[in-house]
Amino acid sequence: MLRSLLTIFTVLLLTSSLAKAESPVACTGRNLLEDLRIKDPAAAEAVLREAAAIPNSESLLWKIEAPGGQKPSWLFGTIHVTDSRVADPQQSIKDKIKDSRVLVLELKEAAYGNALTLRILERENLVFMPEQQTLWDVIPDDKEGRLRNDPLLAMIPAEFLARMQPWLVGASLATPMCEVIRKQNKFTLDQALAQRAQFANIPIEGLETIDEQLQVFSGTPLEDQVGLLLVQAASEIPTEDNFNTIVELYLSGQVSAVMPLNKRIHRSVGDVLNRAAENLEKNLIEKRNKVMASRAAAHIEQGGAFIAVGALHLAGDQGVVALLRKAGYKVTAAQ
Image (cartoon, rainbow, N blue to C red):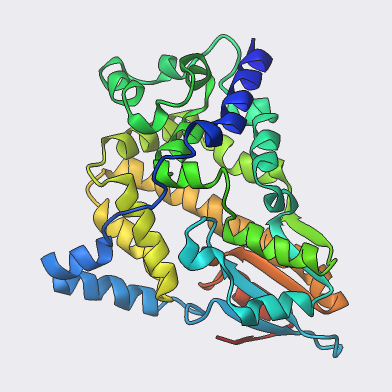
């Protein structure tokens, strides 16, 4: 049954670009930090002060030098979206990739678009509910209608939606329809970097496996997954606004404000859910940072690596930049 549902969803995924070829793909949305600046200037300044106080938050590009005098490597913070304002890398970034020995992404498979989605869906135990249990078994009856009727979930077949783990439903709600459509025929920034490497016949490697990334979400207790999903579904903030805010913070070099701003906006969700969100953040960011830094070191030791990871992994006392310094590398802001 599950395999047949996977086949149905795969067909839907691969044909949706044809069905929506004439649909608008421009993403619109407010910048929530700018909204906060208008409504509560002091609160907005507090968010920016907190972000500025985060160590190593001043740059998206870092030069890495090993003690042995190997060719320098580069660490670049990305954002996994197709927005044309970020998905076309600056010429200086393209040149550094062309001059590198290897391109290292979070996931090697991230270079291949829909293929990554299909590989994810093949990990049934990490993305689907256990046999004999559905999503609706764990969602309170009075909350079910909100999810069933959400337009962002409308393109997912009902039988398939019922099999998805709550975290995967949440991921679907976090992506506006404009981005879903664009991903059918436009590159994300990570894919654009990979294309430059492929043009230059530079090999592509990954710092993590698909299973490792999925386990971060699937390993979250089911109760916490459900709680976070319900808060997300009940939010009055449009998905487009959240999405556009992250993109614009990235463009302005203020990506470290994402977490402080998010906490400010959602501070009233309750202690239990705040703890669940903090635990997920620790697993999603801090634990993975240690893995990324450790595995990046092997590439740095060989010299000439261009390493690209999500921008939120760079900064902080436990960020990749700090961890690489602790490992003995000289890491300096280059942008």
